[in-house]
Amino acid sequence: MKNGVLMKSDAVSLRGGWNVEYNYAVGQVGQRFFQALKQGMIIAPKCPACGLVMLPPRAFCERCFVPVKEWVKVASAGTIQAFTIVPVKFESLPDPPYAIAFVLLDGADTALVNFVKNIDLSDLKKAAEKMAIGTRVKVVFKKRRKGSINDFHYELLDI
Ligand SMILES: [Zn+2]
Image (tube, rainbow, N blue to C red):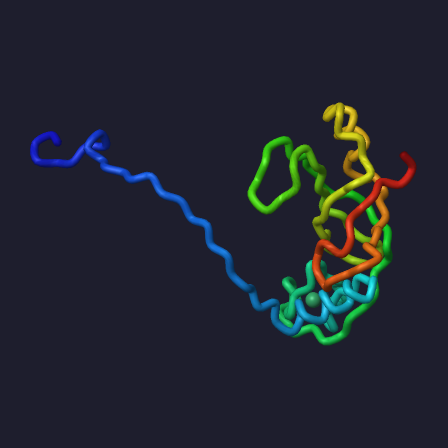
């Protein structure tokens, strides 16, 4: 304290942590999307005004602000828009390293993130080169699906 004013060095802090489990209501749009995943397909809402096909799905067009009612099936292949290779452990995620990518699926206008699983991550620099922006990937569904984003992952084509 200096001249009656608290200084930064006077700050008191207590160490703590949060570990909160919860159920998240996905709503009508999320429910339709996840039910389609359970059936082994990816669908996306299409804006009636501008035609934007949005993934992850939204109830309203992010450009026109109009509600979307029509859904379209998108392709099971697409192009990497961004990626990362995660080298550290995060709670509730796989043991590192693992790769994730934002993929613009053919027929969609926005990218959907998921794991990329058929890549050798023993050499991170080489792995990053193989996942370069513009790389083509395919969607691979699990045989037993639960209606979850984990029902599918991406695999690089042409490796
Ligand atoms: Zn629109």
